Length: 302
Image: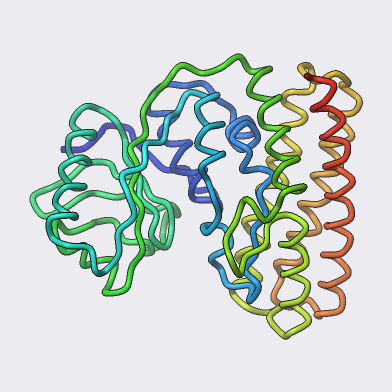
């Protein structure tokens, strides 16, 4: 059994790529910029203090799930599983996945990456691979054993349901409030050893000074968070007519595009540490100023 025409978009942010595929499956006309922006993901920046590549995956996405319903998707959590999960626990979640897929609802998992679950064959579930031409992550999940994930894994499963989208103005207002809260109440949105927003920039800079600037983690965090800031810029352009000031929307779009460029430069493995730290300081300062403007816009929207 396989859902027809279910594809994962090849975004660097694989959560958004999977959700893009679900929106397309349900025929929901939501621009990429609105998906990133209205869900709030465009404003997330989460960095482990050792700058490992887990930053884009290890933060509290529950507020994002609530915002996602504004664009017409309800992400139902089916639980967290690991190498010690029992055969009964695995069988229970597999039954739910097959029931949901059989009813036409895409499912998704996140282990090392976010992936859509498209259906199943005689031996296991069929999963999307985010990037064409890459063997990772695996395109199959064996029933019962989940052998493709290896011995040490940490996996979440979700069902993606269609729901009634909100008025776009409400979606925008809600997302701007979330953007402000991510920055102002950073510690509430992530776990120990990670930093969100300004704390994330501080973690990133400290890790670069400690010699992690040329690491895989630096490259991947820079790549993902640059993509998110570029989508934030697109979002403000897309929804400018809904904001109290179109000129302010254009200004925010220009600033977030500039921040995206700074983070993209930070992702380079060849950049000297001193130059990287300066770029991060500029990005953090500019983003803090953007958040102050976003807060004023959010207040004006009521």
